[in-house]
Amino acid sequence: MLSNNVAWIEGESKSEDIVSELAAKIEAATWGEPGGAPVTNRWTKVYEASADMWVTYQELFAPNKAGMYKHTDGKLYPVTVMADWTKHPKIDSAGFVPEISTSGGTTGRKLQVDKITYTAGGVSVSRQVAGLLLVRVPDPADITGTKFFALIVEQRRQELDGSFQDDKGWNEFQFVAEMPAAAGDYVYALGTPFFTALAFGSYGNPSNPISPTPYTFSERYYSADPVRYYDRTVVLNATPDVPNGMQVTDYYVMFKVPTGQYNYFDVYHGTGFIGTNSSGLSSTTYDKACDSATVKYGMTPTIISQKEAEAAYKRWNNPAAGSFVAPSETWDVDANGTKVISPPAHFFYASDSVVAWVTDKKRRADYFVSYWISVNNNRVSIMLEGDPAPDMDAYYRSFAYIGKMVPFADYDHPGNFGITTGMGHLELNKTGIELKDIAPSTNPIYAGYGRYTSNGVTSVSMLRTRSSVLFQSYYPAFITQLPNYTGVGTIPNVLSTLVLERSGFQASAWTDKYHASPIYLVHQYEGYRGYMDGVVAISAHNLINLDELLVETDILKDPADPSKGTWTEVYKFFSIKTPVSFLKSSANPDECSVAILKEIK
Image (cartoon, rainbow, N blue to C red; front, top):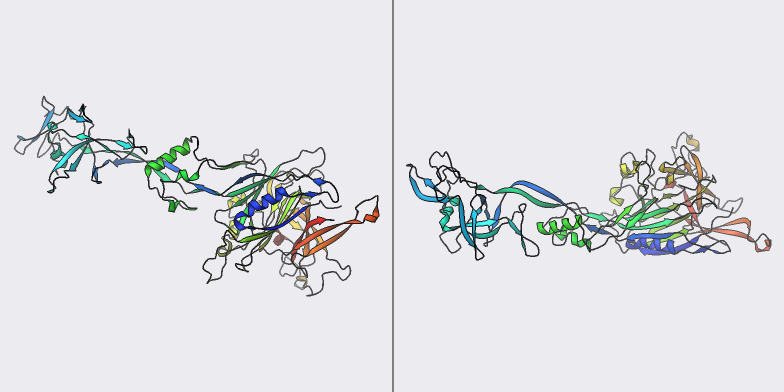
């Protein structure tokens, strides 16, 4: 059977643009039936969003917060609240309570505890003393530091637009008026060191002291959450071929670039994707509210303006026209409430340098990545290679397969969609990732669909099994000679390796051909399911990366005219250079690589 024809694309991209470049090339690919009519490309880009970050806030309350008035001198002074003393036994008919001397007489000082009248803004105001907020501040004209004023204040805050509003939850107070002299000795009362123990109305051993107390309240304030972010994301829709009369299925493939990452991107697949782009400016969530130097990935911002933070909090929770709305994505949810999206498969093309004397070990955004793409409506095969120039020990040649397998069962079409990618070293200093980070037993992200959830790198992650289990592991099987490794299972030591002769073995002395095998996909319970479309396994021995291999088929180009010859399938050989891939879970993990269909001619 002749393979499905493909479009073949080669190129390079800056690392910062690689996911957009790949998506654009896949969507724009063109091909036709072998020697026939063009095929409509059903790969479409349905979503793209740039990386972004924003700040959200928590509204919190601090009980028993002491009120502090900021005076014109820029200093803070404690606020006192007056209680209701109108029932005091020493109150006179005019509303005053005298101070009692040690001899039991009066000192001549007194406080008005009933009602006062003062002028504010040219208007005469009468108020009950009970509940007044008072502050004692120094006289700025007095160089001796012995003269003070008693001020009436109100708990009011100045809004960002300059207006003033009452706010019992904000530690801000506005000057109203000076306490009138007719109210008595409030300057003295607010400043005496005996204010609470030897107070007005009693002296010596007080029985009914007047004790204006510090004003406290439940303060409202705002705390920033760790910086929220959305990685650069591109989503493609795929609609593979199905037999006539069968319902087609839309699948979605998502590429995400982790923030600040130029060594790899993540690949996901699933169904029912809906994406919404952001609107408004994300900077409005933190400008003026936070120290911009702390608005970074992995950090919790430092708030520099509580009022601006409050305004941002209100905009987030009650967005108006033009407010920032974060990007979002949703996926299908199955009957158990599980989102139908796979765990991420890390697709590496480079790593950090580990050379001790290299000062900047990270890859830059403008470093190039080479790519080779083979695409038809059923699947995409991609090979990536990071630029070796910065460090020839810190790049990978990495393979990914995304899409449908050629099934053995005629009915195996719904759920027949998978991904596998190549990954870098499981070493923190190279890739920032260890084995525990991709193992289901140690990372719950890779255990969300059961014990055998695929991580998409050491196996192929298939959307559904025959019994509809999501994102299970499938493993490669292919025809291969005994590989060159030792200590495998119970193979006798004498048979544990097959060392190939340096210049022989390929091409075969008997056929003058290089022998390859389909790559079958096998589930540990369900068995053989199908094989990869247009990808074969082949020994890398005596082959050079990018060699082209010709498969002469016996299928006539024109059955009515045999003179036109037969079809030839052209495969491009790639020497995979990644320490982690699905081939590492095969019968020949070290000496086998892949060839990808390039064209049919």
